Length: 397
Image 1 (cartoon, rainbow, N blue to C red):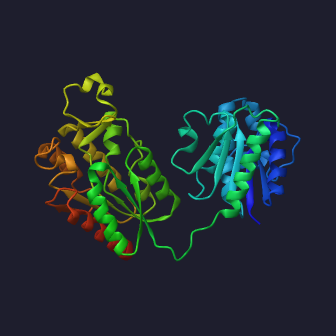
Image 2: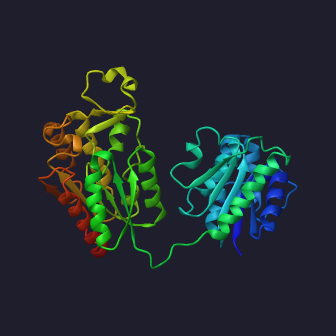
Image 3: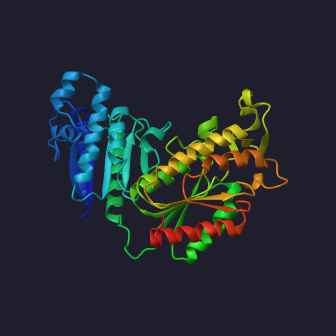
């Protein structure tokens, strides 16, 4: 029988969780109720708050004595995550709450595999849910009314949530062993031909390729999938999000971009794809301090800015440091004919001096292949694909 795990603060939401438990059982699922609250509760949990606190490296007494709500939320979130990781069976996770309960639930499900259903009913779900969803497949449902008793409105919302969790739990299927190995690839509009060529070649070699649009969220999703252990390799052809992180563009994936595969020993081939550009919104939104820079209006909602030689050198140093720290097979590919479609000869971002500043800073970070091609030459993408295949099958560094 499918198992739904309910994670919540039973000291403040006990009645709601008792109602959810009964409803999920009526829908034909087993229920494991985990108490992540720090106060007394009249609802019996399968995993007590004290057990959760201990799993988070503390105790209920210590949390209560400290009287620090923020620290308590953090500790119980960590503890709930540890409890979920140790359960024998989890087919779906359901949580309800306000900002604190949602934060605990978000931490609890963060390390669960992609594809395992995760649903949070929250008073915060009508705004920016980035802090709760991150780069994982967390489903957020707006509670409409506060989570304060089961009434004629909350009954509808919570009933839908229970039905959704139970349905997903029953339908959840583990990956099939015979499925093709997965490769994650990063792509931008200005590197699409290269990734298409690599993807076609990897498909011929027996891989399933998951392509991530390098828009910040896409890069974080790629990192998250690498963390999950589902990937056999990473074809990180488009590392452009690092330029936004350095210069202040709108599509940064954060400073940890290009680290997960290396940290987990996953085979990776990497190129400085689209490091020649920083992304902004419409032309009028570009910060005034960049008024004199080389700007290109990609479309009415996207304006690109060419990175300078100094910025390219710093990007090269940052990429080099990440590749040097990798614990698995890693190869760097350098496209001497330009790092994007806009960096080809005759195009508005063509700047060999800036590119060379990046390439020089990358020197020695990892085994390197230099190709006298633009990154979008099909031969470049195919070469990256062939190299990744050899690294995956032979374990060569």
